[in-house]
Image (cartoon, rainbow, N blue to C red):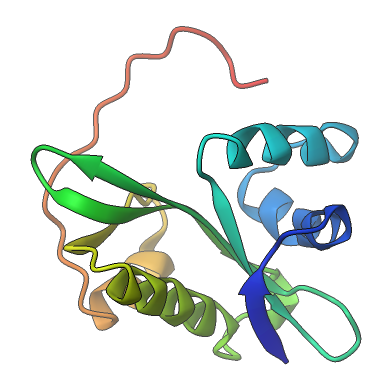
Length: 144
């Protein structure tokens, strides 16, 4: 098993099953182009790849700087395939991202988690994340 940043089209395409598990609205035929657009604005993917080439866990993230929290990492997506959960893969991806944040001298690591994702919340709390705010959204259109 290895964890690396996805860089090639093949890497990105291998990540689709894990991403679509968390984001079921994603379409395979649009995925690569969408990720490449996002990478143009700083999005990165940490991928855990098994010996057989499958990718059971991914983390999509970006480095950003904001007045209220300084230079930090924001994790957009952290997902593990259902049959691969409880094997430590998601934790390894999260630790990889946290280590990158430390190397880049980030002040913090941030993420949002849906209010219904109780198992994820237990995981984040165990990893010493704090619940620090409510996230508000004004929908202007459907995700496409």
